[in-house]
Amino acid sequence: MKVNLMEMTLKEVRQAGKPEVALLPWGSCECHNLHLPYGCDTLTVAALAEQGALQARRKGAGVVVLPAIPVGVNSDLFGFPLVLHLSPTTQLEILKDLVRSLETHRVWKLLVLNGHGGNNFKALAKQLYGQTRVRIFLCDWWPLINDVVKKVCHDPGGEHGNEAETSWMMYLYPDLVHLKWADAGRVKTPRLESLKAGSVWTARPWHLLTTNSGHGNPRKATAEKGRQMVEAAIRRIAEIITELSRATLDEKFPY
Image (cartoon, rainbow, N blue to C red):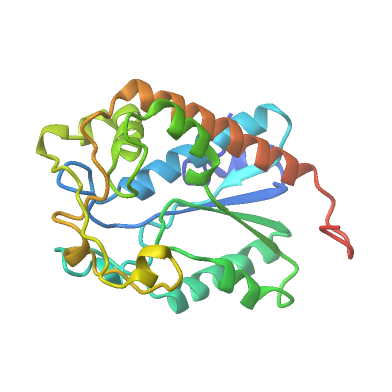
């Protein structure tokens, strides 16, 4: 059984039949402290997408996993070398073209599985709404396991190269993790009280916010913690795919 379009032959695609759901993993290419690879977000979301789709397929869901997009919105990390960036307008054009492809093949449900905090697809999905029969669904995968992170992590804080992210990378791609290289992931405090309170927002220059792009202490990370988080994420992603595959799209959807 295959669900990854990049690995399927024409014979296998025909045998699988037209999928109900196209699953699009979208990551980034950026540094994550000193110990994780630049492809961390893309590698993780691609693995979760494929495993979640396989689990959903076993439950009867019709799903295919599209090629992962490996670059996201990252201009706030340009203070570090070789960070790659797509503007939201470029992301919109990519989505337009992929939606057009899905329309051609009469696949009407697109689930964008986001693996990078800098990506925000809501405005893009709204922009395309009404312009296509394809319905776009969005899921940031990591909030799905907030409860598991709080349960298994010694230090559940931080958001970038932290204990949680390091743990799931140690489980999924152990050869790419160099924990002994990591710094403590300390970050600076904003000078504005409104920024501290979250009353206002501004883009964060990560070379000023952090020491080496890490946000959160990874020292207590383990592959076992990663396994628990990854397995929970796969299970919950599979549930989303399965429900979406079974859903009927009509003029009153989603109500």
